[in-house]
Structures are given as structure tokens and as C-alpha cells.
Length: 375
Image 1 (tube, rainbow, N blue to C red):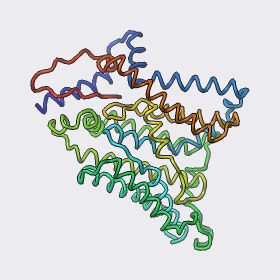
Image 2: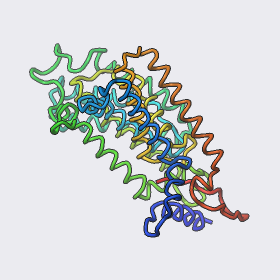
Image 3: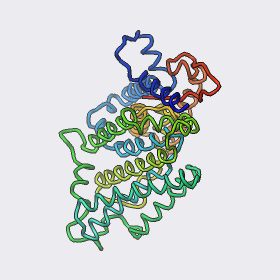
Image 4: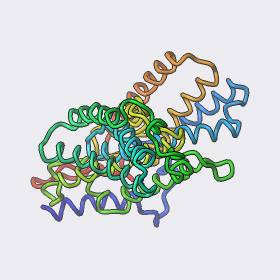
């Protein structure tokens, strides 16, 4: 039984990675625009870019504006990567923005007010994210508290802890800071520096994208989380440690959130318990718009990147056109609902077998439910 399930999962993964045999163009297009494919999000992104370029008289595609988009949305991108891994296991993490704020505040306080060495302060920030991620994962996987409830509670608790640590003041608090200390210089460089015209923060985000892609597509953990998200019971029968896998993805989400929070602190040269408001919703929207299934087992890191830049393009384009922030919220919300509705309709129309490019798998008495895999 276990060997059959592992073989099925390996076949799915190898089939998606196999590029040795020639594939007709029509198959490429079908795969691109199938349910969960990148074709739909790419088309939507292209349409938005063309529309805003025309409406703004070319202002939108000016290099200064494009680099501003990269700088502004690099932090949500980092947080969205951790969110993708969690949602791939059919979970959700509503505390990513709060973890980012608390990690940044602790890093700032230990460096600017306590006078600790730079590298120690950065490690404190990373450890904070890992500790909260571990707590979330333990409560969800071991105590079996629903992930929505657990992370919703942590959303409030982490922000409360950040405000307690900072007394509600931004960090650095110059009344308490060591003379000449603000944020760690390395964090200021990574968050606010530039390599030529390219923001360093965007380069860091690309590195995080590469790491996330490698985890999902080239490691045993990636296969496990796909299996857990696709069919939790089948994964358990196959010998996968389901609670351990879920705990690991929340750990990764916490680490990614901590890195994102410290990058944001470096970009604005400050930290606060109120930073990154509502960013947890942005990350979920980016993941869903990018084609990752909320019910787990299917998704792509590339889809999340495209989904985030769809939201970034929409927000920046409406800003350039002078649209009120209230109308921006309404437009963005309706756009997310519309994209998800269209994606669900496309899934129903194409069916699971066509979306994965496979023929129906014959079912035997001891066969488990097929596991949906994604590159």
C-alpha cells in the first residue's frame, strides 16, 4: 500500500519535470492554460500592464516607476512564499504580517536600545519568526487547533507583544537608543540599498523565490507537503509524518516572515508593532490569484510571484491614475474574487485529469485518492 502511494506521487512529480521527450505545442498551451497553470495569471498581468501604460500615457512603464514597484512589493513577495508552502498543505497562516512586525521590533530593540552586536540582533529577529512558526505548527499539528483559529489568535498576540516590547513607540526610540544606533547597517543595506538601478531588497526576494522553488520541487519535503495537501489520510498511510510536515511548513513561514519584516525595517529604517497592516490578506490573495489551490496539493512558486505582481500592478496603476484608496480596495477585492471564480470555473470545465495532462487512473479496491501535484 505504502509503496503504491509513493510510486504514484513519484510518477506525478517526474511527469511534471520530464523534459526529455518532445511535447507538441498544443500540449504546452494546454498545460499552460490548464487549471493551476501560469497562462491565465500571465495574460492578466500583461493586460493590466498594457492598460495602465495606455491610460497613464506611458508613465506606468517608466523605469523609475517599475523599480519602485519592485522595491515596494518585495516584502509582500517574501511573506507570500511562506504562505504558499502553508496553503499547499491545505493550511493557512494569518499571522505572517504580525510575525514580521514582532521580529523586526525585537531586532531593532536589541540592536538600538540594548546595544547588542549587529549579527546577534539579526539572529534574534530570525529566531523570533522560527519560534512563533514553531508555536503555530505545534498548536495546529499536535493540539489539532484549526489553523484559521490558531493563526488568527497569533495575529493579535504577536502585534500585542510587539507593542508591549516597544511601548507603542517606533524603533529606534531615540530617547532610549544607544547614541548613533538605528537599524543594523546590514539590514539598512539589504532593505534600502541599490545595486545600480536595481533595489537590493528585490535581489534578496529573488533569492528567497529560488530557495522556495528548490524546496517545493527538488526536496523530499516538497513532495511530502504536496502529498499532505492533496490527501492527508493517503499521505499518512504512505508513511509520511503528516504532523511533522505541517509543523515544518509553519516553521518556514515564520522564518520567511521574519526575513520580510527585517527587510521592511531596513527599507523604512524603522520598526513598529503597527507595520505591515493587512499584509497577511495580500499574501493570501497573491497565492490564490497565482493559481495555488486553497484546498491544498496544487500550486506553483512562479504562480505566487505572478499573482503578487498582478496585485502590485493593480495598486500602482490605480495610484498613478489618481484613484481614491477606497475605490482601490473595492477594485482589488472584486478582482481577487473574480480571478478565483474564473479559476474554479476553469477547473470544473477542464476536470482534474485534463488539468494535469493525465488519463484517468483506474481505481482498485486498495487504491488511494490520486494526489494532485504541481511544479
